[in-house]
Structures are given as structure tokens and as C-alpha cells.
Image (cartoon, rainbow, N blue to C red; front, side, top):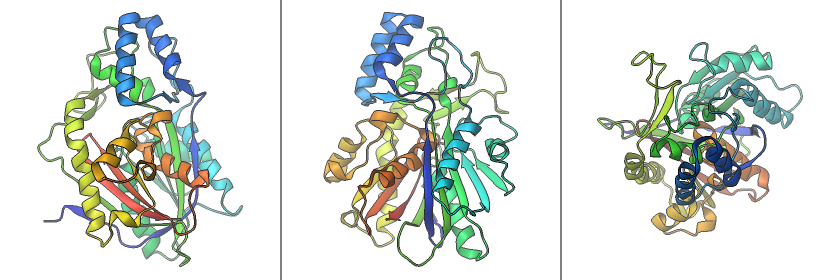
Length: 354
């Protein structure tokens, strides 16, 4: 029985870009607004949760001084900012052949966010959107890499992951419970993009060995967007909201990383061959936790969640882009990317060679 899918071929990472809304929000600022709207007891509970998660800051696209807020920077605009940044690193005459977006917080249910992003960019190329959470990047690669590998005429493919989930939160004690406080202090908003081209044989900036699988059969979702779908068009809250089963996520999370490692080992690699390991950025302790779990030096594990929070569908691209732009990578360095998502327990990843 096939349990993991490996995409044929590999692709060149031409350029990348990250975009964050507004100013960086520290825990102190976040919890000051929470206290003003919900009281000291709620803010104190949130501060305890934030410390456990190791999240110290994030960017959000909503107002924090009112209970409900429309996005101050919309998902299409945020996506377009990231894509324009990436295009600045490409030749001036670059034309995109396809746009693939992925998100768990769509701008509208229909049309897809991809349609609005294409409109924002005046993009003539075809587009599609994947409605997935933290492994949207892996599913996008299952499409983009074979597309580039098998079609010699294919123009570069743009993949963008975007989350503007902060607006799915009502800063009101009637809405807030412990699970919602976890969402409030854990999640952040961002858009992150990569522009992929056909493999040029240089062995530089190569994405390869892309894999995707799941262990979610007969498991209740660990993370779920309630309301707005055909199962439940209406919801008991004022807005669609994220239901977070933290205990289930904590139990299944390590299994997802192990399945990703199994997929890479099954392709002939060992963990010692990688200069960095980039796991899904679930919390601010992910480097220490994975380091202890895998018996690897902590400095080899990428951790951006501490400063950005969990960026959901944008997390992997944002951290990979940040690592590339940091200047830490040397030619030939390899990064193992291990994605994991809790909605129905998917895993996926790839190898990046600088």
C-alpha cells in the first residue's frame, strides 16, 4: 500500500519573498489589548500559555483594539507584496507560467484567493489554489515540480502560501476559551513565496525529493475551521472560527515528523547529510524539542516561530526564505524540510540544496 508520494524530478529555486502585515507585535502589546477588552484574568492565562509555547511575537493583519476586525492588509495584497519582492530577484523579462496558492484562511470561499492574487498582479497566467494548512507547500510541489520536469516549454511557477487568520478571532470572553487563547498567542499572519524554474543542471538552489503523505484516517481533526462550509454554513459564533484540539495535536505531532524522516531515509539519505533541518514552525521551542528527539545539535534546527508565531500555510516558505536571505548557507549546503499539519495529520517535505 502506498503511504507516501514522491514527486518526480527537481526544480530550481529562482527567487523568494516574504511579506508581513504592519509592525511586529510583542506579547506585551498583544496581551495589553487582550486585558483591555477581556480583563486581567484572561490576559494572565494567555501569558502563561504564550510562555509554554515559546512564542514571543508575531505580525497580525487585524486591529487589536476592537473585538472583531477586518484585515488591515488583505490576503491578496499581502501575497502580491511577497511575489513582487521575489520577482525583483528574477530577470526583468521573467513571465510566470503558473500561480499556485495555498492557505487555510481564504480571502473568499469563491473565487479562490488565487484569483484575487492574479487580479492584484494583473497576471495573465493560469492559477489554482490548494485549501490546506501547514502542508500546502508540499502539495503545491507535487504539482509544480512534475509540471516543470515534464514540460520543457514551461515558464517559471510561483507558489505562495498566505495566512490572515487573526481576523477569525473575537476578542470577547463569550468567545474565548483555552483553545482560542492558544490560537491567539500562537498564530501569526504572513505571505511567503518561491519562484521555481526548470532544473538547469547547476546543482545550486535545487528543490528535490518532494514527498507527501498522511496518517489521518479515522482521526478527528486536530485543527478545524468551523462555519462557512457546506457541512455547517452557519455557526454559533459571530464568525467562522478555528477549533483547536491541542492534546490531539501534541500526541500526533512527533509521529508526523518521524514519517517525514522515514520518507527521506527511504530515498537513501541520513540525517547527518543535512546542514540544517527546517521543521514546521509550530512553537517557539521546536528547535530544542526536535534536537532532543533526534539527538542532533540545536543550532542545526531552524526556529523562527519564536519571533513570527505559527504562520500556518506560510510557515515553511517564510523560514526557508529567511534562511536563504540570512547569508548563513554556503554553496552545497543541504536543508531538510519536514512539514506537518494537524487538520487531518498530513506530512510532507523536500530537500533544498543551496
